[in-house]
Image 1 (cartoon, rainbow, N blue to C red):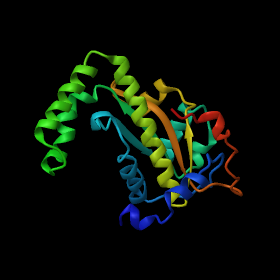
Image 2: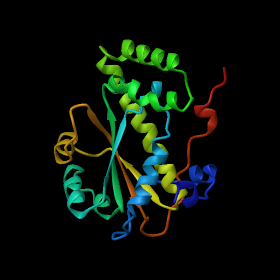
Image 3: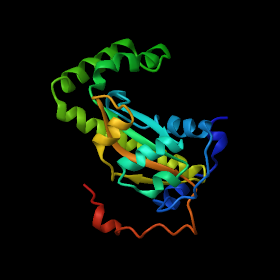
Length: 211
């Protein structure tokens, strides 16, 4: 079953109705098929040069949740949520860009010349710039995390982004490699209690300018 067959909520409704859930109903497992569908949607997020510089770990077993809860300062939602995604940005993704672009070349979506040009540009910009690698990793992972949360909303699931965790403890507990940067956690499941409305936002006049 594809994600489009699972979800029928319009994107505007998903954006307008999404909240960051404080509490989740425990014991509500999600099928691996559903978790995979959420990540498949998240992987459609944009990234510079199509670096796709992200990786996701779906934490769903009690044992893995216990490790993650310890790294997340004991937050109960880690234990209660159906799953918690560790969303990582990857450094030095330019080194594999040719590999990542090849399916688009093979599928006629871009020419080999264009792909080679992108690889050369990414190599020149990223190879000796660790700060840019980190910035792009955070940007890409954050975009993917937001897409994942909206995808969850489209399936009628609650979600919550979480940045309260010990990065070193998390990396050790889940075997992250040196090039994998844990950017945020995204808890997904069924909200406990009556859903509260989305909080009021600042007026557009405060945040929008025209040029």
